[in-house]
Length: 252
Image (cartoon, rainbow, N blue to C red; front, side, top):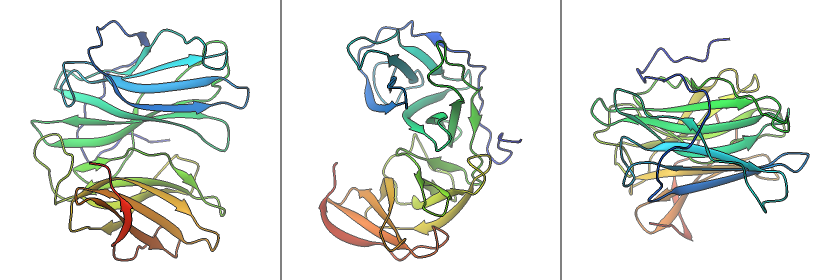
């Protein structure tokens, strides 16, 4: 199975989980997931004096007593020697019970930005074992995700993705070049294809997708214009309607 991208050059250091040995002066983007046996996993990122920073590192810990106590925080991915930072992690348990740890990698100077992940087959094991970090193969110079995948009633996995077909200067964020789409997997996450090219007048990111009762997909898009925008798909995410503004306030 090939998961390593050949389209963009992101350095992926050998991980091997290690306890977090840095002083945390800030932290952000918390995430949570609970296994079938009740183990609670929590993720976030920290490192360096702020976000964004080349020292940004993604972190994980877990609790076996309902969140009263937690294990020591462990680094799930570390910055690369070439200046790639790790940020915006997300935890997700797939239909097989595997725990996914999604996050983003960005390198400011070479405008390389991509989506990475690690997988734990048995998250309730006494000492959970994680796969090595791998890059999700989207053939664009900029890709980013924040929210969890959605599993459709028909079985496809839908991962909301912000992307650009040309390089973006700096670390990313709200940018007029960014489009919204989805990664679709029909083989339980082994491979993904990118679909959709939704634009909004106010640059967007951090999309999320849900399946409606009539099986249309509804995408909500955070924008810099004060309100969320939306788009719909009638064909399981392959194509999307032109985005339109909602009456839902958008966080800044």
